[in-house]
Image (cartoon, rainbow over all chains, first blue to last red; front, side, top):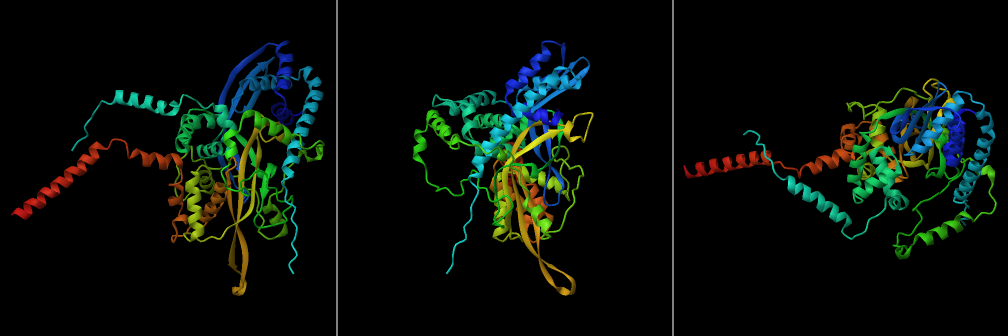
Length: 141
Length: 371
């Protein structure tokens, strides 16, 4: 599974999943922490829709962690102050970079979690869509 | 008259700071940061937007420390921001990827995707709800349980709520001119001081971090006649934008990027009808666009930003609202409140110098009268 998709699942899904997956790696491999989880900022780059130029609306606080496993470097980065999640994300990222056999078994778990996220989003959207206006044209006689 | 170094006041300052804490806690109760986070959404959004740093718990902490004073909370967050390293720039964020929570248009009744009211005070009676005096955690949890379980069946097709921008729709219809993406790297006013004439990216950055009241007041002045615009809200949307960053060694590869989370923003596309002279003096109506986007749900500010954006695109010496130096130099919360409040700091030397001048003038006047 590609990084964009799996990081979205791991961040928006249950943090237990990231913890469980990272644990399967930390229990069997030597994990060297290159950078302890620390706070930083990510400057957002947004395209405005008037002239389609880019501008910076501001920064978002993140927590970032870097680890190395068997020579492969993993980066974990997430918005907010979330050191445990950043660390688990870094371990999982390094596992994918090193192409560990464990990662082959994770796809099903990640897809399952993706389904849970979609279901929760669908419920939220369904609630939001109840506020959609149903216009009725009035008769003027 | 030279400068006179003075000292003293250390003890007074220490006691003053204690007194400040006393005022915050004198009722013997404290408000938890979690409770501010849970219940002060509007203030948190305003503070994050004016501080130009997005983190709700940090904004809640700043609000607690500032005793709910937004200008002080913004000052605290800006100061904190300057101590944290900037680690990355996001990949380009397109607002068409927004997970919409609210989306309306005052210009078009039938916009693709419909008018979604979401959460808004627009249709509430502005009457104080005295029942909130009795509200408890238990009562809100009970309400939440009921609200979240209203629908037994969830339509899983509804998991995507992204909508096309009204402007793109108008461009397809040929009602406004087409526009290509411009990927020029934006300027950053937090890294390089503003110089005039400013660039569009600088203007948008300063407007989005402007003080909500200042931005709103100047835009209001534009509509009242101190400007040359007649705006309508083409589209106003509130929702969450996904933020991603590139992998250090595979820049530009979307699938290999890191998703890092979501940020709630308000976006306003303002339409300004203008009359354009075509061939043979024929006049045609066209639309210009003003753009506003800010952190959180800050609808008045986003709309006001859209109005001022368009004003500054068209400099006009008749109106200060069309003068970029006037607008951009005076809307920043920390700069304006900082300068005004510095007036209460000791100015003994400068004021004594002015007093000396007045005394000297009076003395000279008396001598002239007596001679």
